Image 1: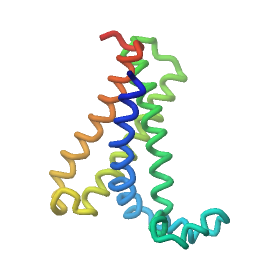
Image 2: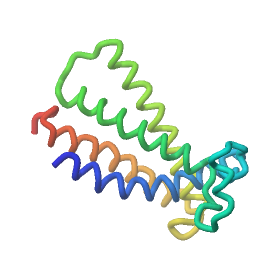
Image 3: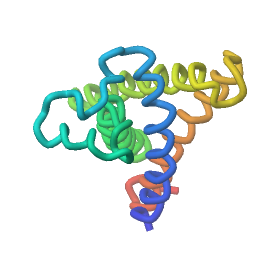
Length: 154
């Protein structure tokens, strides 16, 4: 059951990361807007030949990595807190790193929402609300997966 929740969450998050967070990454870092076929790496140079893969850029690859890191770290963090384990130094390190990654993800998401006009313009308040809902959903999904797997008591 937990894999089913992960699958449906991953489909939604994949769309959010590849559209919104990638746009934020392109806005913050110019090198992230480099198309993959222009990177000079041998297998990726062939992507420029096809219209379907011509628009893939470095931001898409970096956002996929960020998706994996955010998901794994927050499943670990909610598992630690929900189970009531004592905080050891390795768990503190995971908590700090996961929080930093989540804040970076929030900045990318907020930047992507404001730059793309995703919700009808550059309304800062609407972008803040949308980002807060997005972060809450990430933590909620990680908690639900931990509850289904029995790491957290219901």
